[in-house]
Length: 381
Ligand code: FES
Ligand code: FE
Image (cartoon, rainbow, N blue to C red; front, side, top):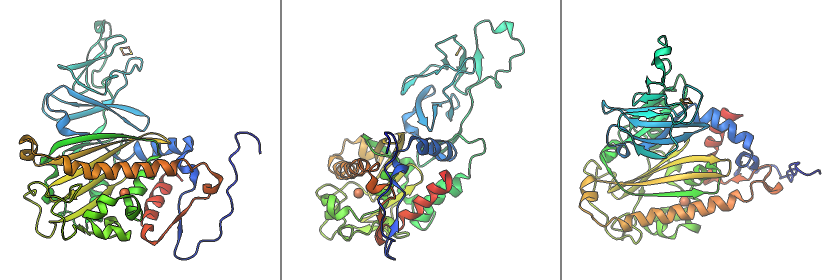
C-alpha cells in the first residue's frame, strides 16, 4: 500500500438477523462526504440558527455558519427577523466578522463602504450618483428564508425551501405521536436560564446517533439512570413513538440528585408530568422536555471531525427572573452532555481504522438509528 491509500476494510461475517450495519467509517472523516452533507443537507433544509430572544432590539445581530455560507441574522426595525448572506454584493468581502453585536440601522462593508439596511437593501455606496440605474433591492444582500418556531429562528438557504410543516414540525410530531404534545411546554414563552457550549471533536452524525440511542445509558449515565430507571435497560425514549420515560419513584425532579425541581410549566398536563421526552429534529436539533424546563441543543458542524454544540436550558420567565436555583437541574444534563460527547470523541478516534472501514453494527435497541443512516444516504449517496 502506498502512502495516502485507505487501508482496506477487514472482512466481516454476514450480519445475523438481530444486527444491522452502520455507515462505513469514512462517512465520519472524509472531507468530500462532509462537503456533500454541507451542500445537500445543511444548505437545502431548515437549520435552527438563533434563539430569537438573543436578538432583543432592532439592529441586534448574530452571524452563523450554515454549510459553506456565513449568514447574518438581524432584528429589523419592524420587529421581524431578517437573514441574508454575509457577502458584499460589490466584490464579495465578508461584511461582519463578529459572532454577534448590534448596529444602529445598517451594515457597512469595511472594504469600499457599500451600506445595507437591516432588511438587506442597498442603502448607499460611495459615488452612487455615477450609477443612477443601480437597483437597490437587486443589489441588496441575498436573502435567506426565515421561520420562527419554539422561540428559535430557523433558516433555509434553498431557493425553494422544503415545507417547514412536513420536515421540522413533522419530525417533532413523528416522535411525540401528536402535533399537540409539545404545545403544553410553551417553549416559545420560556426564557434562557443557562447556556453551555461544547466544542466536540467528533463528526455531527456521531452526536445524532448517540442522542438517538440509550444502549449506552447504563454504562455512562449514572445520574440519568437514577432519575429515569427504565433507561438502565437500554431502550431510549426515542425508541418508541410518544413515549415519555417515567421518573423513578423516589425522584422528586429532573435534577442531578433527584431533588425537587422548579415550578411546573402550566401547560404540561398530568399525563406528561414526571416524564421525560426526547426528540431529534434532523439534522441538528435535539429537544428534551421535562415538566419544569426544556433542554434545547443546536449543533453547528464545523469540519468532518469537529462540531460545536450549543445547549440552552429554558425555564418559565418567573423562575429565571426570580433568581431561583437552577444549578441542580442544569448539572444533570450538563453531565449527560459531557458523558455523551466523551463517548462520541472516543468513537471518532477509530473512524479511519481498517477495523471500521465497513462500519459496525446496530443492536436491536439501536435499529431506529438505521432510519437516520438511510436519511443521510438518500441525500448524499
Ligand atoms: Fe464591499 Fe467593496 S467589497 S464595498
Ligand atoms: Fe447519552
